[in-house]
Amino acid sequence: MSRRTVIAYWLIPAEPAHSFFQEVINDLAHRYDAPAFEPHVTIHVGANRADAADSAISQAPRVCELIKLKALEIGHSREFIKTLFVQFALNKELQQLNKMIRHAAQNSSYYELKPHLSLLYKKIPAASRRELADSIKVPFSEVIFDALRSVRCISPTRSRSDVDAWRAVTTKKLCR
Image (cartoon, rainbow, N blue to C red; front, side, top):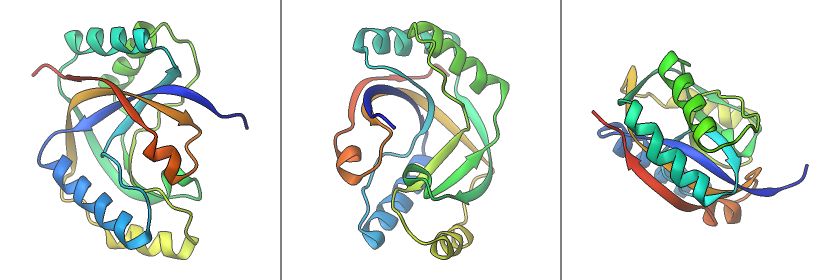
């Protein structure tokens, strides 16, 4: 699979969820010698065009209020960027935001929206992933997201150095 530089569009959780998830991510990164990163839900991945990212981020919040997502479960997979994650329910507001950003970014690339917030990026055995998933309890049934961020990154992200190379392009608070 070829790798390329892309712009990822993230939803950033509001407090107190942001601090909770950041603490879990930092703890797991330390315990598993894995990269630490900001808690986020990726809502679209598109072309590496900073002008389009600025446009998408500045246009979307005008129409969009805070996004509230229902937490479903702690999941895990063999995929590096989905080693351990909180799965969220897809709702109309999130689908609308995804469509708005894709349109504003003038980007027709196909990105399958499966809302999740990763907690760990690391290749670890399935038994360890299952044990970790069972041990984490998210104290929120719903999480509110209050910011959008565009981030330049390598896709697919496969290593700590890929994560370390992420660079924020634009950040915008969502209207209340």
